[in-house]
Image (cartoon, rainbow, N blue to C red; front, side, top):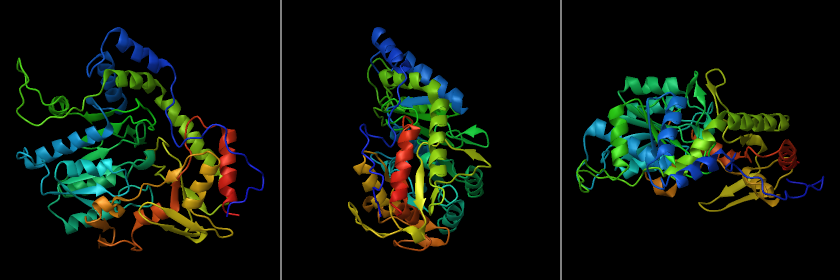
Length: 421
């Protein structure tokens, strides 16, 4: 139960969860677009950002798109076309087919499946990285042997168990769409995320570690796939003197202005990662002695980008917390706390946190879809084997803005420690 025994005052300026950090180079390239009058979805900034990102991640081709969701959608469309052929009119390439999806993720990961008419089957989370569970994925193939596509995300910048996931997919002849929207710059066995799937996507949304305010990118080693995504993203215009269209297209291309911001940001990726790592480590040290843990990662094989620092409260240190679909309440209890109390307390001091991603199988829009845990099929909530629901209940994302000062972070740590008094 929070006690402001040290008379801590609210921050004069809000401490954000994760906000854009501009350096000045961004304005240079935006101005360059203005001077050259490339105020469109083509131009030098786009070309350079595609080159820089492809080179950084270690793929041959990158296609700059309007957002990470667009990249995921076209990656999913490509996978469906490869597996099942071109779609019939008014149908998606995955129409009538199931797809295994990360359960604990932002809904954009899963929405791209439904855009293409697919039926998501949610795969539970594993505790070591908070990502898709290889054991649950293997179980899912036993239940649905005909599934040929897996879509997984790297949660909060922490790489999933890629080798284990790939091994399961290889055994069952399944393709992979890798959602690296949150993990730009993170590595697994020395290779950057965004290069491990058959189709890959990243995001430059306003709160990401590198941002253009919006934007995303499709990544591949296939020129044919890159060309197809580039065509689809510009309304599938054919090579004709007029606007000729043979297949469905989308207005998904990145703006040259947005690309200018990203172009100016990319030189600072390693600096941002180092800042985020320092924040994570200060939190970890500051919470020593409390009944909590930080979001975990496989230190032997992976290096996160530390996009968001997260806290998980031990089950025996949780006070009573109740959540509906839109509201949360708690009952204060001495020596215990919960995510709702901590988040409400941080807000009172002008600091922003948020709950862990609510698992997809708990979302009303996807409540009728199947959900597989490591122990088997689960269609109802509240199972003891439901790892994702447990992490959602006990976890929260901490203020992780890379501009937070050590002094501000010390105050945040003190506020959270007081919640356990």
